[in-house]
Length: 188
Image (cartoon, rainbow, N blue to C red; front, side, top):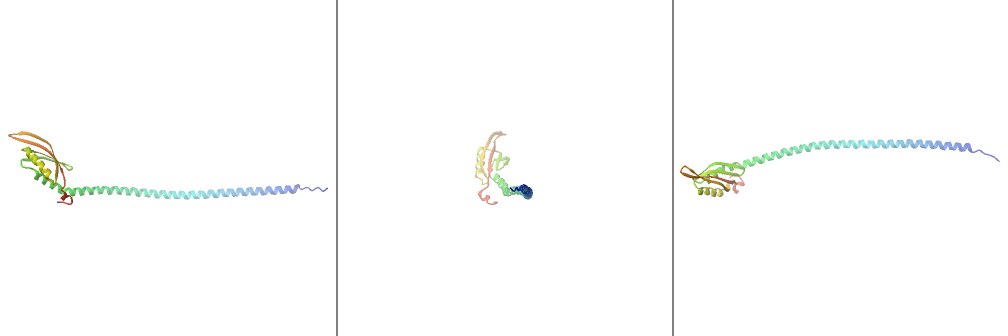
């Protein structure tokens, strides 16, 4: 019988397969490292790009915040100017009212009655004075109520006292200043 030793051939084939395995493992490691490096680089680039976009957005937001603050400041200034204009217009419109008010106070004053004090708070007017009789005070109240510039007279106090030989009545009357309908459209 012939005896053939196949061991060196198998041994050589095993070594070749082992070398191929090591080459393939090395190649797989190199490819794996290359893929990891490529993905790391790609993700780093994407992150950097997103950070740049975020910085640009934050810069734009800061610019817009400054513009909004400026707009709010301008709006406050505009509101103050509008309020000033309204005050000036109110003063302009009420300027002739003082003349009409004094004219009406004189016209409503009956004979035998005089004022000691006139005081105005808002549209309320306080008239403090003296009269010879209660009838003259009643006449004053009727005249005030009939006046187009005065309304709603209310008598607060009447005090009767002796002054020499005469009996005088001290009174305090409140009325409301109004504008007649014809004067509300423009100056009359």
